[in-house]
Image (tube, rainbow, N blue to C red; front, top):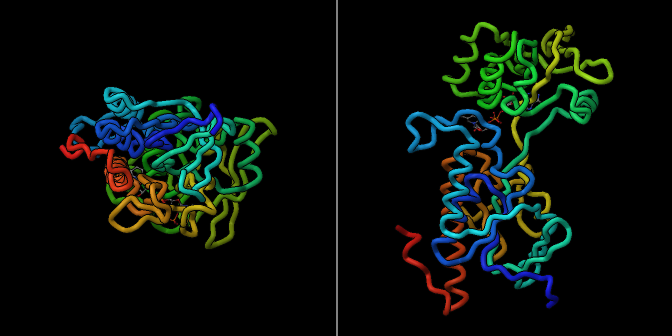
Length: 326
Ligand code: NDP
């Protein structure tokens, strides 16, 4: 084994509520976890404004603040939190191999995957063009809404995320037009009602995006189509927000782990176990049903406990700690 290969008892990939919770539990169980944060330290919640449904925060908490607290809690127990992006894995042998930034090789006794999910886009050429130019297309109202203060914007989607983001934008922007492709919302009643009751949000049902319009540099409007009547019309807007769900960040595990057709990792029901021994999954990388911060944290805990038990079964010298169960 070359000197450049590091050996790690428990490697955690990803830094949302799942990853940090796994790190807290693994660190308290003497597993010396190493956690790689990925390209978006803190995960999706860092793009969420107010989290009002995580138990223990009666007044709510911002996503970034909660992530900072979870990181600090993991570090208090000496979890090794690192910058870096896992670019390749090899789970074909007894030792689980992982590469960081295409260079550094790590051999792991256990791996906990908490890579979460990423925002989806419509895939229109015009959308991708202005996204790449940084000219007015965004999948994160909380990150980018500020740039559209007192302007008119369009948002696509009808789930809780779209409602939350539309409401957030309505507080900054002059007008928000919401494009809903069916004749009803997918979002929970409370979120949909909040949007419907907001004066400067106009909801267009049965309406899809035909093209994002622009001057070659920045977005100037959106051409939409009513999918019942096929009528098209243009809406003036300087910002085009996409809030149509997420794709699990699991591409690097293809060929090793069992994934469903969308790419979610398939775990043994009721556990965090994958089809590879010693590789565990937590959070949105496997969860297409609940997808909440609190459920991600819960499965992060499960993954650390499953990893600990796996290590104990494999190595009689590794003692299962009692502290992690308290
Ligand atoms: P969802 O999958 O719930 O909703 C995606 C929405 O995008 C749907 O309305 C869907 O339309 C629409 N959509 C998908 N593809 C297209 C397309 N090509 N063109 C137009 N519209 C499209 O994703 P969310 O991100 O909203 O929510 C994910 C999970 O996170 C949910 O469980 C949600 O409850 C939760 N969440 C909770 C929050 C909270 O409680 N504060 C905040 C945000 C999310 P259609 O309905 O027609 O399929």
